Amino acid sequence: MANIGQIADKEVGLSVRTKLNAAIEEANKVESKLNADGYTAADVKAKYEENENTNAFTDDEKQKLEQISSGADGREVELAKSDTHVQWRYVGDELWVDLVALADLEGTTGDDGPAIELQTTETMIQWRVVGDVDWIDLIAQSELKGDPGEDAVLPADNVTGTGITHIAAVTEYPDTEVSGTLYVLLPEVPA
Image 1 (cartoon, one colour):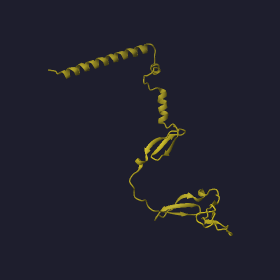
Image 2 (cartoon, helix red, strand yellow):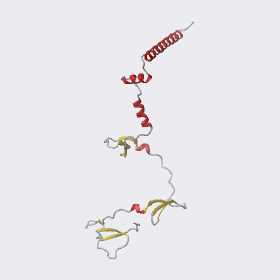
Image 3 (tube, one colour):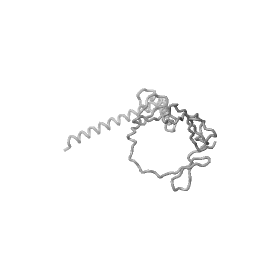
Image 4 (cartoon, rainbow, N blue to C red):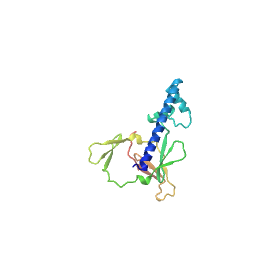
């Protein structure tokens, strides 16, 4: 004897099959009518996409997505660090958006790296790991040279009580020293 669940399954199955067959039959009628009226598939697609709320994925939308996936440029962003977060915003926007908490970026303390050495040549500052043979250029000395600055002026009642009121950075000591000036000898930097 069949139980109620088996009977319900049969009834639901028949109902679904009946509805599906009716939908297929209706679709075939619509297709026949459209073909008889001279509509092409492109005509039907255009008519469908003209309606609101059809959730159509239009050709325009496809093109926008293709531009995105092909690497079309987006808006420029800026990054910043607050007291608690790494933040971002679009260039020109006022509002910063928290990206990640700084606390989430902290890890365990790692081992110290190898010791390095620095040296200068006539034109470069170089570095290497202690014990290595080859030196690696770090920066050209010419890139470190800026415009000449002015001598620093200390207040007349300076804290040291030495009477020094000026500090001058020089590459060689002058023949005649100016009273109250402290001369700091700097290494010569190539021009």
